Image (cartoon, rainbow, N blue to C red; front, side):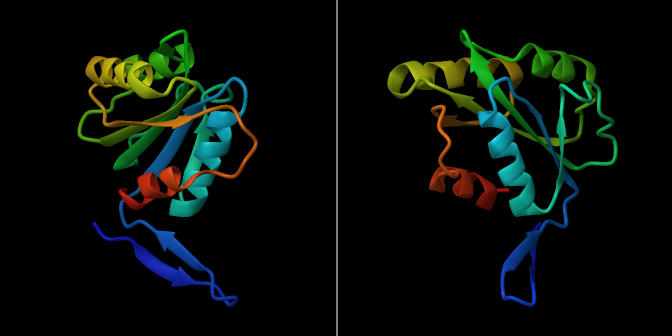
Length: 143
């Protein structure tokens, strides 16, 4: 479904998806939180921190964007528990991960996560305080 575009009085374009979307994330050090908040702001959706709400009700959402860090080759324990317990059937589920590995090691990590959970997975690298990269905007545009 195509997004609807609205403009504020100052001329800033806001993108609102006709598909009901939620961003759910698990973050230890803050990188994943910053990306989740950025994505939610760009698409006009709410976001939920699994640390504060480990079992959110997703029944009213069509698309679920999951965000997590990668720790010793695996996604966070909170995210694993959420995926195991939530009813994600019939939902359009996407996942982003924040990790430090690039190149072949990073690609292999992503492949393993994708194979294990079956969701399309994209990765954003590094622990930095800089604004989100163009790659994140490309991910948002693909929604």
